[in-house]
Amino acid sequence: MTNLKSLILGSAAGLIAIGGAQAADLPVKAKAVEYVKVCSLYGAGFYYIPGTDTCIKIGGAIRIDTSFNSAGYEVAFLQGGAGGAQAWNQDYINSRSRVNLTTDTRTATEYGVVRTYANLQFDFFQGRENIAGGFAEVDFAFIQFAGFTFGKAVSNFDPQWALSKPIISSGTYAGSNNATGIPQLAYTASFGNGVSATIAVENATPYRNAGLVNADAQLIGPFGAATSAYGTTGNTFAGNSYGGTHIPDVVGNLRLDQAWGTLHFAAAMHANTPGFYGVNTTALPSTNANGHPDEKYGFAVSGAVEFKNLPTGAGDTLKLEASYAKGAAKYIFGGTIDTAGAGRYARADANTIGFGYVLDGVYGAGGQIEQSEAWQVSAYFEHYWNPAWRTSVFGNYSHISYGDAGNLLLLGNFTRTGGTTTSPAAGATLVGSSGNFDLGIAQVGTRTAWTPVRNLTLSAMVSYTRLEQNLGGTYFGTVTSRPTPATGFAVTNQNVFDGTVQILRSF
Image (cartoon, rainbow, N blue to C red; front, side, top):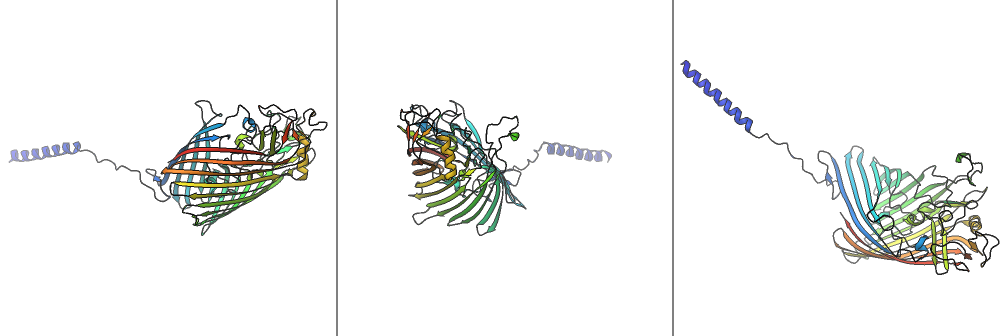
């Protein structure tokens, strides 16, 4: 009996040991894999970041542009330099290759959606980089939370379609356009039925400071070396007497978004902070004994409308905008023209020249700032022939004037006594002048685009630009790579034709 009991117990122990060994050999159940899931809350292209409730969309584009008789960015040769002078050594063809990368994240919270957005650009631009170089920039980088926007974003002065104009690039002159964003703090309130309003403070540098000229302290000219010319480098010029950005611009808008289109009304306040009357002779600029004019405040107002799905065809759109500014000229003369000469316009043709300036104001010794007045109207119409082909036509006119007092200061800066058309006095730049510094830029153009497959577009654009100025007389001075005629350059209007082709692949 004892032997039988021992046998049974021993067998049971053996079975338990065997079972335990077999259990230990079985594979452990793997943790469930978290696959990437589509996030349909915010439109196509969004996915949940694994392990979070945040949705992300990664996108971008590659674009190749080639411009003809243009400074790149589709900016007509009107900003001086070799192109504006039509010199032998100008580049008749300019090319740009760009890689664009974007990230867009969104998270639903009890305060609403928290959004972050960034747009990074990697450029190779002929003439700016070496053979294998490049240029990186951050066009947009902002956070949106509970109605607030913090960071670098499109100005709230601009209509909501500012970045979707039916043109190849931002080199046109129509209205405010900050294609690379402006640092800002903004709050947007939504009232329902597509109505919203925004109030913001935006950094005026570099997009909004058009420049101030101290007409008694600085000699400005349309061409020449950096020590005497206006706008030889983008966003800087020897004639600029801005004292700095002391306060941000205050911008507000009221919007209506509907299925038929959009309405947009905006206003902005812009500070004109002048430098000192004369050259600073002390160690600290704030103790300059010459003094300076009082700070002035300018403003700008704008109205814009977009009509969608017109009777002319599905997808057709019409965009209209009109703006006015006093002491805030860069709200009127926008685009990327600052890449080639800041606020100077200058072009020579044979023995003629046309030039003018986009300034917030001008002042002389002991005087106050004489603010400029500017206005513009622009229109864009785009027609879809079919889903693959579309053509747009656009036109705009921008104008700036300085009033009687401002014109006297500018003319006094250019005109030198004691000179004649055949024997100008030393340092003379403009002899026998008549008229004023009122300046107008008229532009018309057309673009045709073909999208053979989704997200691949080939397009071509041509435009005509006319510089209309109101000066007379004869200009004596340096013009890039061009000898000065014995009788000088006759001051008159100028015309430019240019074109661009592009291939764009977005993803």
